[in-house]
Image (cartoon, rainbow, N blue to C red; front, top):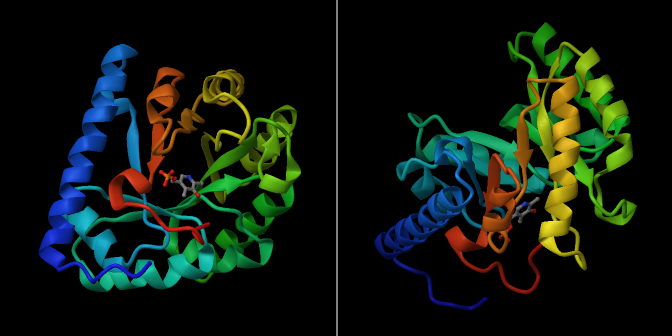
Amino acid sequence: MSEPVTPPADRAAEIAANLAEVRARIAAACARADRDPAEVRLLAVTKTFPAEDAAVLADLGVLDLAENREQEAGPKAAAVAGLRPESAVRWHMVGRLQRNKARSVIRWAAEVQSVDSTRLAEALARAVSSARESGERTGPLDVLLQASVDGDPARGGCPLDDLGGLADVVIRSSDLRLRGIMAVAPLGMEPSAAFARLASAAQRLREHYPAARELSCGMSNDLEIAIDYGSTCVRVGTALLGGRGLASP
Ligand SMILES: *Cc1c(COP(=O)(O)O)cnc(C)c1O
């Protein structure tokens, strides 16, 4: 897009206003659903936006940031650490991940929400294990299982019926910590129908693994519905930072 470069002060004010609006939407949705807003994490999706925008979010107290492409995220996380060395930003990977990126993703991501196959889970566990052995990191990696509500393999995610088997693989590794499930509402399905199915999958998972409490669903357009169905983590890009243009992922 060929808009003029916005002066930083205006950009910061714009992001602050967007954030106030998103927080108000979350609060209103929680009130309607009779839920405590503290149960719903806000994950700011900074993909395609510069490190400076991520730093503004950190200044505003949004410390959970997410990216969907490994190649873009690593350098951006490093740049934000340079801009705000004192801030306690946590990065989350929410996009499709190739197994050969396991080693690089764990250098910047505190949590990977897009674990959708046993092979990926095993690759991440191996990467964490060797990073622990070499002293590069101390703790396990937080992971969410990415569920596919419609089972369409082209869009990533693990079919709902296979989540239990995938969870068993994650649980067996001392290098991974199972936190819950994540999903994107499929195209061509009512969000409420998709979130209802997800909510029951999340409930089944919690029955087996009480610590796997997170249900990461809801984005700029459907966060209210997701909160109504029990989302504990909404992932918001556009409503905070603006449109990404036609070529955006
Ligand atoms: C881009 C993205 C989001 C944010 O979407 P918006 O509609 O811009 O809020 C959330 N989750 C994932 C996995 C994404 O790739």
